[in-house]
Each structure stands twice: as C-alpha cells, then as structure tokens.
Image 1: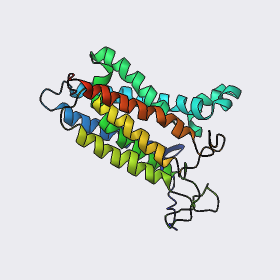
Image 2: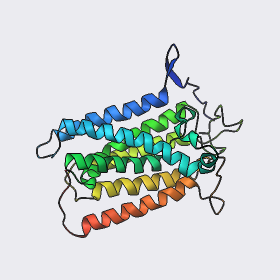
Image 3: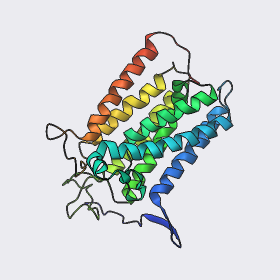
Length: 264
C-alpha cells in the first residue's frame, strides 16, 4: 500500500485570503495553454494573432468556470438544486463537472467566434490540444485535496485517503491525470502538428477523452448521492462519456469522408 502524501490543500494563506492548490492548478492550465497557443499562432499562415489567443483563453476560462459549476449542479446534484437553487452560486463548497465545462466552453467559443470572424470548429480544432493540460492539472488538484478518490482496492498501489474511510482506495485522480492529461495531450499535440481536415482534431479530443474517462470510471468511486445509474456498474461519468465517444467518431468520419478545408 502506498502512503497518501497529506499536503495542505491551501497553498498560500495571506490573512483571510486562502489560495488553494486546486485554484493554482486552474491557473497553471490557463497560463500554459496561452503560452503554447501563442507559439502556434506565430507559425506562418496560422490565421491567428496573439491578441486573439489572449481573448480565446479569457472566453475559455469563463466557459470552464461557469459551465463546470452549472453542469455539476444539474448533472450530479439536481435534486439539491431543486430544494435550494442558491447552491448554484455556492462555488466555495466545491463541485465542477467536465461535461458541463465542455458545454460552457463550446458556447463561449461560439460567442468568441462571432466577434473574431471564425467558425466554431476552427476555434475548437485550434484550441483542443491544450485542454488536456488543464484537465491533468485539475486532477492533481483533486488528489492534493484528497477528493474524488477511487474504489476500495487490495492492490499495492492503494492509498488511504483522509476522507475515504480506513480502506485503501485507487488513486483514480492520478490515473485521470495520466490519461486525460499526459496521454491525451501527447496524442492531440502530435496529431495536430501537421494540417488536419476540419473537425479532425476536435474529433480526436472527443473520442479519446470519452474512452479514457469511461475506462477510469470503473475504478473511480461513484458520487454517494447517485451511486450506479444502471446495471450495478454504469456511473454518471460513463453515461455522459458515451455521447463524447459517438461525437468523436462522427467528427472523424465527416473529416475524412471527403476533402475539406484544413484547420490551422
């Protein structure tokens, strides 16, 4: 059994102000994403400027935060929302959903595209390769915070989390950081290094994120108030990931069905 490294979830305290590692992970994702996209914008005929990249990151951040919170409340805690709608604003109590954040980002990108004169998939194909950085960093933040741990295991890699009871559990946050962060970033960054048909990069992101998330959910502890959705094994995370796999396959199909304009 591995020992869980109990790290104070508060990275810096300045009087009443507490800066948590989870928030720093978000900041790391946005800053790293800006730097990498700004580098790509410098390529000849990229069709992007650094100013547009800066605006893209700002709109994306708003979409992640607002969409992630709304998605968590609606997808994972809807009954509590009906009892007390004000929980939608209680972000200090935690709760963010990737699937809600993704929908929020897509809306934000559509809004940004109207101002920048770009189509939604021009933006998504350009920005998708940097999303895994934020995903991986966020999972590290979950691990430091001792939250969203996995199911009980007797494997030598199990950890006893402070809020997970006395039994060792899968460090599923690290599995997700490795798959949704490192592996997905590597796949997308290498895939997008050359011009690809429109929709292809977005399709690869949707397909592989869906596969990785669906897989890890087999060892991740379901939300206590939801449990299994069906068959004594299907979780809400898996249910929400199935459409992503389907959308990814569909986008790749239409991307390579016939020649279309290449994405930047």
